Image (cartoon, rainbow, N blue to C red):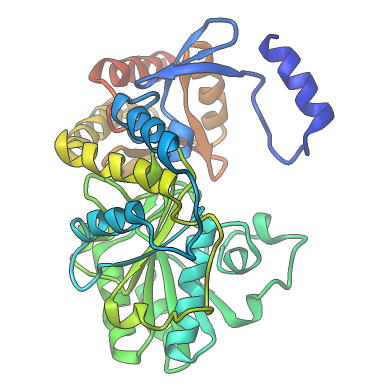
Length: 391
């Protein structure tokens, strides 16, 4: 069966709710993928910032295989050693007073849990979110996603309790957070919104307002967490510590796991029966996530992302210099966006023809979130493609 045949069967048997390329991959290794026809690609998408260790990383493969041979699932009716090991590993990389974890299956579930936690803990209902944000596709997380194109057709959702403000607007957030606010939910970098980093002043102001007015500061680290931005978590660039963070994507390196991490005091809000999940934190996914954290630490991949990302963006800015069609090059670490309007999708197609997989976010930004093990040679290949495309 070739890629075209898979696409034809997909159109017959699957919901058509994804705009898929015709390509179908057979296997991967490191930052490379091979399709069913044997063509090789450099993966700058990484499963949308998921495959932080690349494909078929031996430590991750070993952890999953060994755990699967022992125990895959038992449910949260019982103690789970692998879950405790993972919570301890996360506690070793989050700043105090964060350190209590609860596991689920995805980023949307993590944000859903974070919102429920904030509402129950504060006894309030009002939530402040940002325009251009993205927090998930469940009813509650769509309600705090500040993009009409995602909410259209599903409203009213829960949005009567949500107020949207402009991202990085100090006066807007000062006027929005009050004594009725349960939570402010923010991204340290708006990924789906076009790779737009928050400003330090904005994050510090949000932290101060939440502390002063009794609201919880929730930071969505689903896409930015686990070393992506050159720090373990994106909020660490701004010198603040939120009340709750949500994680998923790279946490499992490819297996589906999400988490919220909070303080001991706030974590006590969830008592038995107040929140739960059947599959969340099962032994298999926790073993995988433990392996991810181990490799990120051992191989200093967080620090590597910071160093490589800074040099990469400098080079991309140099390439873009003199080309007015490139509006901006921005990001943090190995989360890089090149804003180029209508040319973004043209470059995506051009890069694909060169065996380079990139993604477009916000319709105008070439987003590159490669595995944190990406080689300099692969980055050089992308840079050359950008030079050739721009002429």
